[in-house]
Length: 634
Image 1 (cartoon, rainbow, N blue to C red):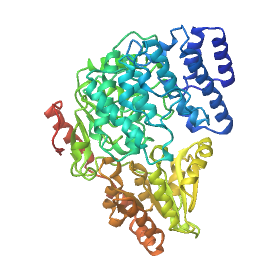
Image 2: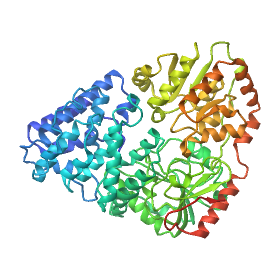
Image 3: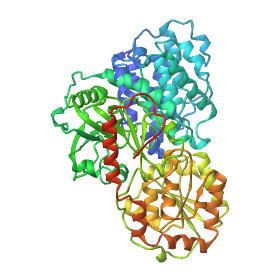
């Protein structure tokens, strides 16, 4: 989707209402599209009061038009088809309209889930398609997931023509809102709906039209729960979305890309964020050094208007492409995939297959004889096209293969390494005396109600202590989320900070007494910076790679095992123990005093050699066939 500056809301609303008054379907369709050609993340990141009012007006106007004009029972126009039925390529033409209730809630609207539309699927089954579509559409517009629905009954009632829209909404809107900070991860009714949809997809036996919104589901569920998300990812991403993308093909594009610049070497790393400043490059570039020196190229594909300002890794042979426009997104990616597939590549490696960039779509294609992914996003891709997932023996648990669709390949060590983080500009000894300071740099997706409750318990047991939160928020986001976080951290001091430069964050971490790792999605790169700054941390070790890096790092540097908790009670007790014992804090800092020794313990000097050995083993074995029973050890 194109990320552009949002047009003036009042003018947009005026034009839209004018088109409605004139019965101008073409004008209504145009203004609907303009309404959604902005990044919906802005809804949550920049909600100061003027912008909240703007979004409120924009989305309630859209609600008026959708329910009162486009989807009204007495309307004779065909606009409802644009919204409710798949486009020729299989995707919903305007998928973000489904999210309107979610954004209305964020802007403070009282319309959401106000029972404005009947919620009985039985009344739909006997209606003609047009009326069935309009009734379903009006229901979805005002329901953002706060009230339970019977997903199976709805799927049966709406019929095959409308199941794509309903599935897209269930997976991308219903399961992800309202804001997770109000509950323990997914609400039970949302979890049940996800399970029902996943089971239904498996039995459907055919691909469904879908949208990019669904890519976010597997991503967000992995942040929200410690459950095994393999089946959900495989059924949604590995099933429907693959069919959609492969079907896009290399059709003509209004502004054709220059595909002659694509790499012609035998091995390609597809990593849209392959820049020295990015966390994925920082933890995986050391592993790929041997591949770089053997001539592997890095391909960076960017969504329209999202090409970063910072340059790519200069020591790599890199090729950057920026897609031309949102309307041709999948077609352009299909053309890139066709061109790469024609190059007869022997290996494509994805440092991360995350739904936030074009690499996720390219990973759905067979572009090389052997394809593998890594820990940049430590969750299975769910794709049959990815043969191997390269991880680390010190990170994965004893039954790790069951978490991956791919054949798991385990390197000695962590499966990641680290480049050298900035050194703090001041030492802890220079800090003024005062109560203990805690810190966390967990981003918004990593924050959830159980985690915040645990932090509140920690603060309650450490009078005078303060928790500094550094989630890389804009100033507007701090104003928006501060009041929403405050009720969860009532029993101690907590300060929400705006976005800091990396050096400034490292300086703050160096002045902290204890860092609090997140769960169920923990950290890695920040934890390296924490330890290299001389600060200990407490972590909760789970069963999946995404919550086991912290434990592996603590064991590497030889810090006490009690800092590695297996449940929330032990997590809180460990943090309180550190905060309540100044002597213990001094002892832990003393163990981390030698920065060079700490970094040496966190690095694997043979990481590149191990990865090279894994590549040769994967190439010798060839593409994966069937399900793996146990990890492949290197």
